[in-house]
Image (cartoon, helix red, strand yellow):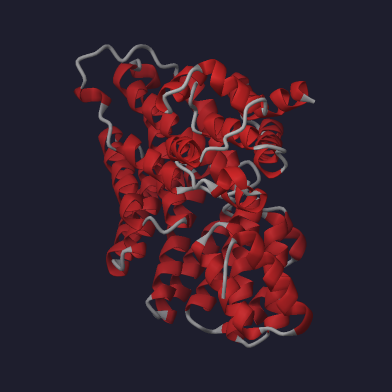
Length: 450
């Protein structure tokens, strides 16, 4: 049994190494990475959710924090042999002061080590320590150091970025949070030492890394740090003057601006970039059209958030025009841009305009099979929009059903995000009978109370 546990513990690391070894990132490889993200995340979570003793949970969190045995033993003032006995269950953590010292070193509440329910809840979500690790990574500037940064392979960081992209699309945010700080450090060093031939590729990885950081932080409403990451992405893109990088960074900046109430500036920034890349997009639709269309989708959602229905519709129409030009051989750069994504963004805009009835009518025209072909992250967000629309319309039973579907598709979206927690609280207050019992079970899994 111990050998099996050791195997499961190592799976996330092996998945990461697997991603670094992939020679290409075609359709088959992306699906393989997608499955590996699912597999790695689920096996890592098994340790915390089904462990028989405190020591196994200590091991889980030590590995999740990327702490070596000696490093962690030194942090708690004990020997590695003591730690080995604790993690194997041969020695109990019975003294409260020592338990608290171990929990503090791991950055978790002691209950995450001693209580099985709290252990499962804590393990499934990005936590404050991981947000702080991303913040700390944003605060490091390798270019200021006099030390030799050493060689960082561009191909390696490209594959690791692709792995984290797939984890993001799978809504496995804890996986992203765990590996993102190291990727950020590596990508920052890569742009310092890369050859001229690989310069654009290295900068694109760094932009992607900052974008992932910003998107992650926005999910969990750490908006100030999200804005910093987005701004870093934009300045990185401006240094290389690469349209691909600029378009991706612009979306992050616009979303971060929106989160801080700067909606006019967010729309202006998106449209400025769309204007800037218009002619180049016409010359290079295969590479740029999806990014061009996503700028209009971003502007549409922001306009809806400030109750500008006309502008939201105009931006949707521009995105639709781009989607209709999209061909199967065009690259979507993990945006899932296309007709279905444009349509579900229209539903999202109508929800933000508080037009629940129209949102539900429009949603009824979308083919469910095409939605099911999207990433788990996109599907779950669409289901959360439909949950909100049904809640606005007083259709609480249907809202509960859709929120349950969202939890099945992407558990972390429902159990960990503040947005979903707000929906759970609303439904806890507005449901009775079986729907109320369903909501209560979901709320319990998320640690949400009325």
